[in-house]
Image 1 (cartoon, each protein chain N blue to C red):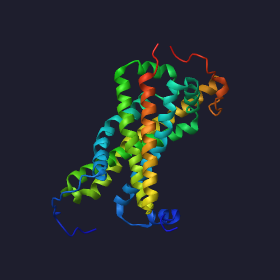
Image 2 (cartoon, rainbow over the protein chains, first blue to last red):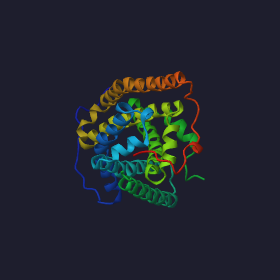
Image 3 (cartoon, rainbow over the protein chains, first blue to last red):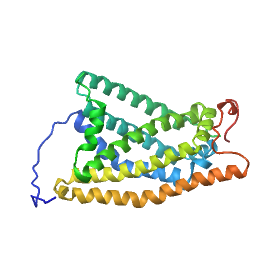
Length: 129
Length: 160
């Protein structure tokens, strides 16, 4: 495909600071963090370790360190909202009924909060012996 | 009802649109994102059982050693790698709009980087599945048998 323009002109515009602009910013910032946290997590747990020698003992050994608890907590707090906001963005492309979309968004938001709190409590209260 | 675009229309038009390679990056980014989200939701609630219901967690991680889940794991690994690389590309091009004339090349670079990382990593995981099955066969067992929840009593001790 032949390019018709050599340079791309840009202009600066000011956008409203609303929920969508913060959601956009969150996707970019959490994305950069997940680039290390999520890629690191799957590489460590699937490649360096393996599901074939995963036991509760392995989890207990890892969570005996507060560093791993912090890593897993941060990954949880960033990945779950990133994923469900992404799902909301996809659904918005196909669902044009505003009322329905608002209901779905709230249901997703509540589910995100419950999931994060439940799992955060699990990580933090895991009994070490 | 006109408020929800038909699933068939969505799927057909999603493939028909000829937006060059960037179109396939967009399709792959969505599919890998949805795939990761599905896995993530199950994984997070399952891992919480390590604290709240250790015997259910102990059972579930043995279920996940089945080759069926092993193949799913290859998809998860590939999805995370692709979504991360392409997400970085989107973020960079959003951050520097004047780089947009590199968008076609950048989409190719992401696919090449992805394959360079994923092919050996995915191959390694597949070998791991075969090794696991071969080890079980050598012990007179089978990797195709799913563990039964009744073999994981709630009052047993699973770690020290």
